[in-house]
Structure formats: C-alpha cells, structure tokens
Length: 378
Image 1 (cartoon, rainbow, N blue to C red):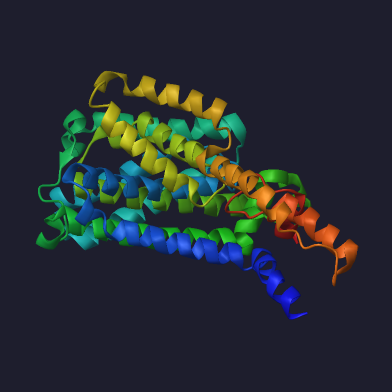
Image 2: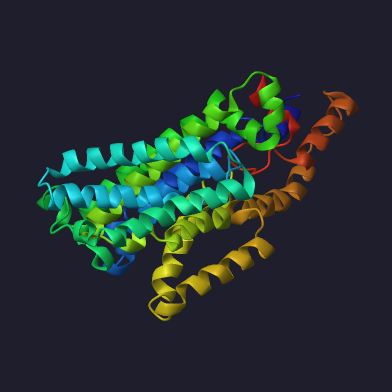
C-alpha cells in the first residue's frame, strides 16, 4: 500500500487544483524580478522602450475592459490620452500649478471627459459605437490645431522639466515610478475582472439581451467600463507627457487610438496579460521600424493588423496558452491514474478531464463558454 501511495504522489500533484494558481504566482514573481532589474541590465535605449511600453500597457489594459470584456471596440482612447497629457501640460505651463496637483487635475479632466462622452457612446453598439468614439478623438485633435495659441498647435506644448522633482529626472527612477503605477492599475483591473461586476461585463459581451431580461442595467455597466478605460488612458497620457517633456498632437491622433486597439488585439483581447504583451511588442516594433520608415508607420500598423487577424485571431497570449495546453495533453494522458482504488469509472472520468485540460479561466480565454457566462449572470 505504501508503494502505491508513493507512486500516486506525482499523479496527485499533477491533478492538484491549486497547481495553476501556484504556476501563475511563480510566473508573476519571475516577471516582477525581471521588471525590477531592467534598469540595471538594459542600455538606455531599451530602458526608454520599456518605460513607454509600461505607459502604453496602462492604456491598453483599460481599453481591454471595453474590447475584451464588454465587447465594445473603441477608437477613441486617444481623446482621453490627450486630455491627460494636455491637461498636465496646460496646468504646468500656462497656470503654474504644482506637478502633483496638475496631475490629479488632469486625471479628473480625463474622467470627466469619459463621463460626458460615455453618455452618448455606450448607447450604441458595433460599428456605430466605433464611429462615435473615432469622431470624439478627431474632434479633440482638430481642436488642438484650432486653438494653437493655447495648445501649441502643430508644435505641441513643452513642459520644461515636466517631472515632479529632480529625483525623477533619472530615467531609471522614472521607470520605477511608472512600474509602480502600472502595478497598481493592473491590480485594480484584476479586481474589477474577478468581481461580480466583471462577470456581468462578460455576460453583456455574450448576451446583452439576456442580461437585460435578468434585470441587469447593462447601460450602467457599460458606462462604468467606459469611464474606467478613459481614466486609464488619461493616466497613461500624463505619464507620457511627463516622460517625453511635451504634449503633442500625436497624443490625440487616430494612430494613437489604432495602436492601442492593436495592442489589445495582438496580445489577446479578454486576457489579463494580453494587453501588456501587445504593448511590449507594439512599442518595440514602433521604435525599431519607425526609425527606418518614418513616413510609413501607419501602413506598417495596417499590415500588422491584417497579419494578426489572419494568423493570431485570438492573440499571442491565447495562442501560446493553446500551444502549451496541447503540448501538455499527452503528458497528462500518461499520468492518468489507472483503475484501482478509485475504480475504472473514476479513472476514466479523471482521464477525460485531463485530456480536456483545465477548465475555462476568464484571464486566459477571450470567449468563455456558457458555464462561465451563466456564472456571471446569476
């Protein structure tokens, strides 16, 4: 009996339901260590890319709440990104407000902008929602040029130093500052996704009419998600302006919105890690390729979008998870516990469950199946 017990330990460990949680915890710890040593290991050029990738990842995580979890594709994130960057710049340069007060006011401005524009946008779906959000960004982009004496027009608005204190002038210190804000935003987004509110968002994405018949006020849920995405974009805009020392018209351009959308699609909409992976890949590509073909970056964006849609329809994270699941399937089948103490029926059930792999997890699958969806609708 002892020999059988010892022999079953590896199988028991393989079937331990806590194993995925431990793997995720170990992966997060490893990523945290890697992120912490970036300034000490990378040259200044790649440190700049890493900092900008974190900034864009903040905006992409917010957009993912709309695209991946609510099913609303938006091309208006540049509007809130620009409200954050120009809000900070105008308050610092024109009004002489302190940095922290200006940053807080810029967040409030971005939140207010999302709250006002969301009243109209979230009443629409599909192409109409996409076009309305696109129009919002274009209106602000045009206003930036129209009020050039106030915003700097095509030249943008320089912030001077633009950072809170001399300590932040070190690129390594600013990277750690950005990393801390990124971690806080990621934690908040994770809490939202795992909450009943987040489950309801997924229900709205799959069956909004069913949610309405069950008594959910779907308009309010979509409205709150829209505001949260706007706040994340405004925070990213503030960090971007502070890091680059300027608020420029490109912050409000359609390229900015399209890049944010592509980050979510390329990384994996409806996954927690997808927008981060997409932000890292897209930022590296942007700064590597745009230096070679400055005038062709919009065309490059379009090519990347087509390739991602054709070859990675569910994104890098979901595709990688599928490959790992298929690679581990033969091993799990070998580790299937034979009929014995549990009887042949129990062994067969365990084997079937192993072949299917782990159950659906909202942070991995962009399209949960009905069981998970009904859980969010209870």
